[in-house]
Length: 418
Ligand code: AMP
Image (tube, rainbow, N blue to C red; front, side, top):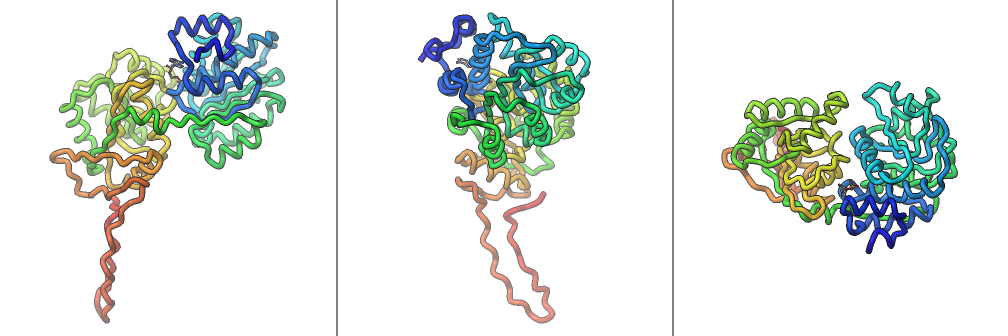
């Protein structure tokens, strides 16, 4: 199959040739013709599947072919994203794919001054990429009107709900013209996402490009059981032993990220971090340095887990398991992309066994455990099995209570809290 056979116009085909995209990915093959026909879309696909081009190419083509001129403070297409990083990345893709087209794209997000954004919107924008909170601010300040809007894309809709944008989204949706084309992308089709889709989409084409088998199959995954308090020590030991290549590390909290960064830098490793407390420009700079190999390790919270586009990243480390099993898939999807093989190592302590079980249920794969010499945990990580259930230790039979005795019942220690 070729891009030309999907009905794309010459200026886009030229760009794709320059980029050396030879064949459409599965989501592109399904989504592009449907979007060009004006259909709504409900797609389960994540970063790494080519979904951005899947919606960006037909969106740019539709706007070009309609040819109308965008009015001041107006937009013709809107892409909502959960994070600033993803907004920037989608903007870059739109600009790259639309290189030979007479369209203007722009991105607005919080954490940076609103004034330049208001100025830029004055001229009108064909495609606006936005995070929900900042867009609502701009709307309330009359910096943006939606009466010319004909196309709405919700990128990583589930993530927007996870991040607590539901209210902002409701307010925005009620401000948008009901007659429009809507494309909804989400990693999961959870109940709230289905509800959102029911309310917004007209007879959508459903596409399910599950990353679970494709992205994950090429990634070698294993875990090291370890006591929580010894994770940093183990991390440094593995780092010294294995001479890790360019590595993306995930930790649970901003504080954990900072502490680990300090420990790693003290070993002379060039590392940087991104998390929600860092100002936007320095987050983007850290990401760029990592992409350019100026630093070899990037430590991040899940804010950064989605939307990062780092080709052929060889290694992802989960210093902590994510609370949400879907995030594990997103995290390790950073390695083994576009068919390259990758490795994902998780440091797992006993208190994370429920998260581990949820991940194994989701991926239908038991993570191989490789104990590290001298790090056998005092708090054993309970056994799990495919299907994800914990294997409970059989309860010891209750001792019959005797008058005056302690009568203590042993509940088993399958869920140690360290
Ligand atoms: P995405 O899932 O949209 O973030 O895209 C993942 C990566 O795949 C990006 O680096 C794109 O530039 C690249 N890509 C997207 N579509 C294709 C294609 N058809 N052929 C080759 N690379 C692609």
